[in-house]
Image 1 (cartoon, rainbow, N blue to C red):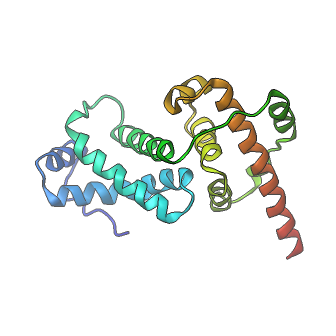
Image 2 (cartoon, rainbow, N blue to C red):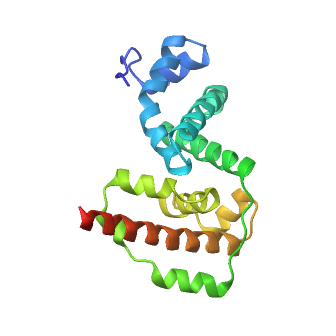
Length: 188
């Protein structure tokens, strides 16, 4: 992606331009935020195509809701919340979560290691993309975005226990994927 032209000297001028329907302002806002928001979308999507769909949907919402931004907190944080909510809506349209038993949850949690700390970000994103949609969404909301299980349960219309079990199962699957990744690297 090419760099923003900095035609708009500050964020409030850029926002005002977008609200007025100025195409240059809209293009610049897109250029400024698309790479980071695509990264957010990638964490929730199963693949690049799905992430691109989320990105487009998210920007449509940003442009539609710009006049509701009140300047409280960072603008990027406001934009990011829209993208996380877009990913959640995308998830809700596609998935229904099933809780795990308490025994399964404890076993999974006990086996989870921190091998992810030793991998490149692109490898981790690829592994997270390999998770089933429900596990991927809960994992991202809890681990990356920092939401509590109570908040996740409210967002996804599930119980806290389901949120916890989905996270636990996601960790188990990731651990297995990380182990496979490490084994492949040893073979090379």
